Image 1 (tube, rainbow, N blue to C red):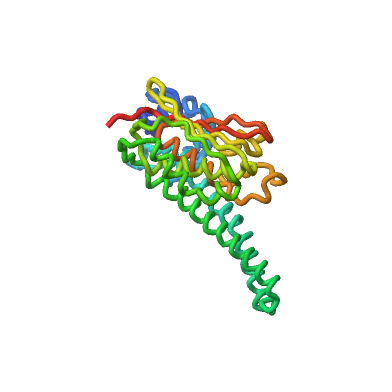
Image 2 (image 1 turned 90 degrees about the vertical axis):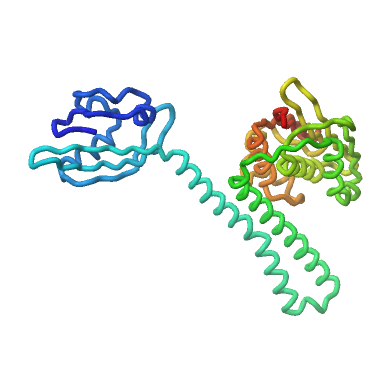
Length: 323
């Protein structure tokens, strides 16, 4: 609150936290205490026009903040008034909104490719290519492959969209060895096609406490990558380590590996490693983003060690929950 003499009347703790300084300096001119030019301008405009003002402004204090500011002109009498400044830190809200916009834009862009292929090849078939069995079979195979990629892209997108509504943990105790085997069963076809040698280095009687559904998302995505980007007749290893207050799930492959410069970006949404090396391998660029989100929901951490043409090792470190 500021009085008609431009002096600070009072300021609450929340405003002090936003500006990271003590603003409750009574009887001090506001323009000496506030260190944001846009806010000072907004207050001056409210005093000059005797009307309420509102604006989102930037504030640089330990990084850039976005502040939604309302300045209310409150007349008390003919010659007396108060100015009330309501400041709301909306940095995280705006960041989330921008992420949602970027996500929708990227998803729309990624959806165009398989949809264009499906539409184009189906039109060609309808235009007469159906009579040529060799060509029609080739086109139908392409349509089938693109439709699978489209379904996977939508499923990964839905997984990311659901994460915000899936923050609560449903902790249960279960056997990790059996859990890993169940996930591997889902990839039997891919393992057989590429003749991958799978090694499960988990103690058969190891019991852990975790959210099974979230851990399933994490493991399935890591297994899928470890198989897809592996070389034919390569190896895939799943390990588990028990630490003092944590435990680790480690998935290693002997695949194409990831360049050092790209390793920091692989958990970004829609990011895919060097297209020249992966263009023949289906993928949405969302899988590892899903993994990172779920690992963070479980208060864990994920790290990567990788060398091009030698393989990758993903290590998920999670707390040892108790029931």
